Image (cartoon, rainbow, N blue to C red; front, side, top):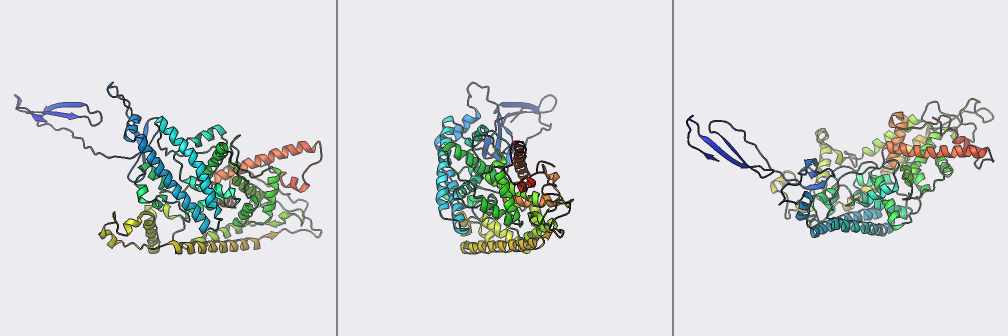
Length: 572
């Protein structure tokens, strides 16, 4: 800036020279010294780069851990001297060798989390120790695919972390599904749970998706803020995008585990021809019946329907179209829902049994079932001020409504989640002494108390489930019959009031409560469960139509009772 002498009009001239902060272009301005001028207030802030979308927008990480996606990459410069594009600049900032080191550090941290999960499952939940070996072997296969992807990405100079979420359609071609999972890098943290699930399936253990989901949500196994289990020396080698991938600051959503299991199963079968045994359906089905507090008759009914639709509970094949019900556990829970709708409809004008030998001679009172289920949930919540797994969902508004005990428990959770051991023990990088005096840290060894707490919690849950089941079984009503043990002539047969539900709006209060409980067992949304049930119902309709054509030509292969049970499944 320079000022000239006063002119004939009595005003001095001010000559301003500046450079554009975006283009570095030189700009000049000349104005009287007595005039006002607008001065821009420019603040500079740096964001870690996470991803670059196909349309050129940057995905940046803010200080609060959120993403900022409204900045677009500048167009390539028209200056012939500057031919370096944005991606070339990234490769200059992060050379290939540095990229390989960061990839290796991330995979080491991912592997450490996986090892800890498998060890917790084997030692804290009485699963066989062979589970750890099977998980290691599966990780070896997954690591081969990851290494191939790293080498392929480095050769192309385009290995960039993707934070975009993946979704799964109801019917999806195998080529699209395999292409999606082949290009997925780095492996998401939810894949650690998926590998543990596939390992349990290989060992024929009755471990459900819902159980693994609850273990992770309630911090019974390593998942929430898994980054805290990674040593600082290894953590310092990770770039921000990889740290975010290992730092789960939001709860695991429904369906995420199912999608990961389905994708990894297809991947292992397609690339390695892995022979995965069928699901341990008998034990798993019995566990479902027990968890939902249902009469044992639905177990036999669900099993008979599985024979009718020829369901073998084998893992999905990469050949053919992929359906939600193709995952064995989704097919099994769908069969149970269909059996419940056949035997114990949610409508008040339910069908009646035709004789004392009919399994539907017992009537399930859904109002009592709903009340007992709510009491069961309340009993589980009475043991702690903050329900297990809900601390990560607490917002600023809910904190202001806490009582003293809840606030203490929440602060203990925050200390466990966010304060490093090194900082709590006044080692290098320790917290300020003034802050420690105001908020002393009650750090203690939680290993023994944690093990005792898991055992006491499991026993409390089993006792609450027994009480709920006893209350519901005692409330079962027996239909009245005449002296010959037969029902009235106007009694409706099984399936006469069967109804198919296509969306949430079709569910009444009783049906919705049951479907929510069933969906919670497999850690999916109710909409996903409804879709899987509809797919199985279509198979029943196809069987019924083929059976009708066969009956016109030859006697039926199935008994009359089986045909009566499913006679009305295809009707509304």
